Structures are given as C-alpha cells and as structure tokens.
Image (tube, each protein chain N blue to C red):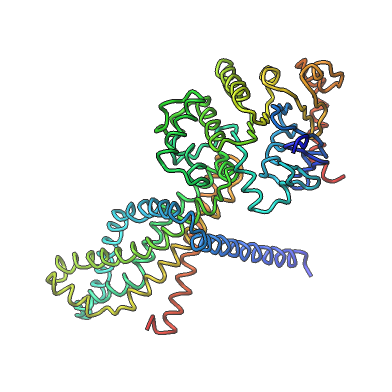
Length: 270
Length: 266
C-alpha cells in the first residue's frame, strides 16, 4: 500500500474531527449564552439594555442596506421570471414566482449574508480586538463573565432581529417585483399585490422566519467564537474576522440546505 | 488573620504548552506592603502577575490569595476574591466601546446596589484622585498613553480593593509622565493601607515605590528583600540588572534561545 493513502485518511479523519469539534464549540457557546439569558435575573436588566443596544446596531442599522439589496433582488427575480414565462404567455405567474422565491429562500438568505457582512464580522473584530488589548482579561478580573457581558446580549439581539429583518426583506423583495410588474409587466399596483397575496401561504413566510432565527444564532456563534479564539496581534484580528465571514456563509448555506430539505420532505410548516 | 500573608506562592510552576515559564517560585506578601516584581523582558514576571490574578492556571504548586488557592478556587470564590482586587493593565485595557466614566462605573454598577447618582459621584472622586477630573465623557481612544493608565488606575480602585496589581505602570511613557505615575502610586500608598504589587522593569521606579523587591530571572526568584538588601546583593544576575550590564556575548543569547525550545523536551 502506498504511504500516501493512510496519510490521506489520517488527514481526512483529522479534518472531520476538527470540523465536528468546531461545531461542538458553536453549540457550547450558544447553549451557554442562552442559559445565561434565562438564569441570571439580577443582571437581566443590564443585559437587556445591552441587547437593545445591539439590536439597534444589528437590526435597525441594517434596514437601509437590506431594503436596497432585496428590492433589487425582487426586480431581478421578476425580470428573469418574465424572460422565461413570457415565452409561455404566463406573465400572470410572475408575482407568484417572485413572492414564493423571495419569502421561502432569497429574503432570509440575502438578509443573512448582509448580516454576516455587517454584524458577524463586527462581532469577531470587536471581541478579537478586546482579546488583543487585554479588555477580556480586564472584564474577567473585574469578576465579569465575558460570555454574560458580551456574548449573551448579542445572541438575544440577533435571534430577534434577523427574523424581523427577513420579514422586512420579504416585503422589499415583493416591492421590487411589483416595481417591474407595473413598469414592464402590465400589472396595476393592487393587481400585483392581490396576485402576490393569493399565491402565498403563511408557511412560505414562516419557513423563512424559522431559518432566519437559526441563521441569527449561527452567525452570532461563529462571530463570537472566532473573536474569543483570537491570538495575539492585530494580524490575528484580521484572520478572525475573515474566518467569521467565510465560515458563517458556509454554515448558513449548509443549514439552508438541511432546512429546505426538511421543509420539502414534510411539505413545509403545516 | 494577623501574620497570615495576603498573597503567597508555593512551588509555583506555570507552563505555556510544553514550555515552563515559572520554575517553582516561592514568596509571601504581607498585608499593606508595596512589593515590586522586577525583571527583564521574558523573565516571567508578567506571567507571575497573570497567575496571581487567576488569568493563568498553575501547572503545579499554588498561589494563595487571602488563603484561597486561585488555581483550584470555584467560580464563585474567584469572583468574590476578584471583587477585592484591582488590576491596572499595561495598556489600560479600558473597554473601548464605553466612555472613561462608564469604564470606572462598570464594576460599581455590576457588583453593588448603589444608585446611579451615587456611582456618578464616586466616578468623579476616583477620576479626581488620578488627576483626570472632567474626562468622564471622553472615549478611551481620545486619551494619551499616560492618561489611559491613570484611568485604568481609577477603575482598579473603583471597588476600594484590598490588593492592587499594576502591570508595567510606567512602560512606554516619557520620564515626566512616568514620574507622575510613580507619584500617583506613592500617594495611594500613603492614603490607603492596601497591598500593592507592581510589576516593572524600571529600576528607578522600583527604588522609589517599593517596600520590598522580588527579582525574577528566567522563571526563578533570584532576590527577595528590601531595597538596601537588594543593593547589597552579590548575586551576579542581580548585580548585572542593577548595574545595567549587557549579557557578555551573543552566544549566551543563542543558547538561551535554544534552551527556550528544548526545555520542554528534557
């Protein structure tokens, strides 16, 4: 047997073990934070204030960019749909195509990617810089748990705000489709929205909301985990931030596949 | 309680991976004493400080704060001890997302039931003590290096601690600013009967503020005594440090450097 073969197996095994350990770490950080949010009534008031502050940054602050991007995604979906559907003379199906693809998939996914770029990276950079400048050590020596002080409020903020942003992006995506519908599809405003409403069921929106909730948790877990594991030096902060973005996108896509498959097999949230 | 040291280390060994940094150090610090831990770069003095405050776990031996082993203390015990300690880090380590005032108020708001108005007054008093009156609403990034250190002292003193730790209080400051920091430590020493542990490599500063000096070299304590005792020391490394003599030749450096990598293997 050639010596490269066991090496390959060893590396594959090592890689798998590393990946599983990383996911285990994410589960640990998530569980710990959620437990802290539930179990520290004395600190809840201040924790809540910090969560509201985070929610403003990650949620409200993201509205303009999420709105703009998902509006244009709606326009693009309508244009691409119309290109094919017009050949079949089925232009009346464009609103349904846009609504279903945006609410079930693109709204939550695009929102997650924007949130990764804005907030996931910021979490890693913020916590990583605090590690480098000994601020995390300072918190610890002041008897303040960095998990309770920094991480838990971020989880609360993201778990609430990412689904809200996803619903908003659904609306903006439909608005984008409507923009094309009126200008190029011969629809009236009310006509477009009536067709959209008739083509959507609650589970279309709910599957997106459920996915977004999980996306929010995963983006926070990866961002904070990368920040906390930052080594010494400014270069390490850069590495942590890049890893946070790349790994978050990968995790979000993987989770999306799993959830979409589950919804497909179970016929959605019925 | 009388006679029991507030800090004690017994055969304390600390490792980073396979590399041992502290090779079994022993010392005691009684209540109310100002002790300077003196040593060159890479001597292990900062590791010693980090172990004393519980940021590093000893590989073996123990470090006792008020009789409690920091390495084996439970979370609650450690938290209770840390509320009685104040630590001023080398770069200040002020929380960048908070103002100077909020930084100093942080331990008070988190660990006491004081009214916010009372906390505000206390913050002002603490800032006044370190000569930073009126800087409550500044961000840490707007302060100079020396001011950051002063603000860090104010935060370390916020909870009126029994033990104050300083990590390189005058490193990176100009001589005038460094003298100001030394004065500040001297004033604190006069005003409060607290135990202070100052880690530094500045000889002048050590001679000015210390009741006792512990000299750390390559992870060993090579001197532990009052300033006259230190000055009378015949230990070659102590003499070399006091007389500011460079290492004899580069070969020693290379051997030391190699030893760093091979220590763990032996």
